[in-house]
Length: 146
Image (tube, rainbow, N blue to C red; front, side):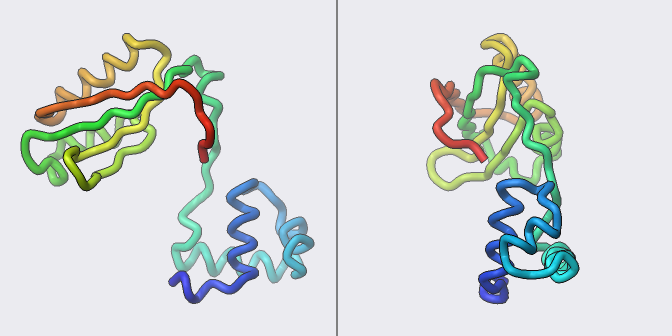
């Protein structure tokens, strides 16, 4: 699929990554196309699944979630098909969840208001799957976040 994207499609995607609310006219001006041509390209990118959706990036600290943490989990057994994993995915405090290679099974990104809030999430995770080991890392500073 990556080979079927031309330079204009890639430029449109780059611009939408920066500002998904950019108008078709503004996108067209940036890539040298008319607004209807941009609209059609975006529609095709959506139809092909290249554009999966549009989201809002929230300043979590404005919601009181000032602590960023990453939780590395080693499960007691292969939890990837465990129904408890769905509950973890659905937890609003789990921002990102990855199945990873290496000594750990999963990596979770979260935002919490304080250490007690973070501990509550860890307790909820442990109630859904059997955790053999967990390591929590608290970010001191965010250098880049998408």
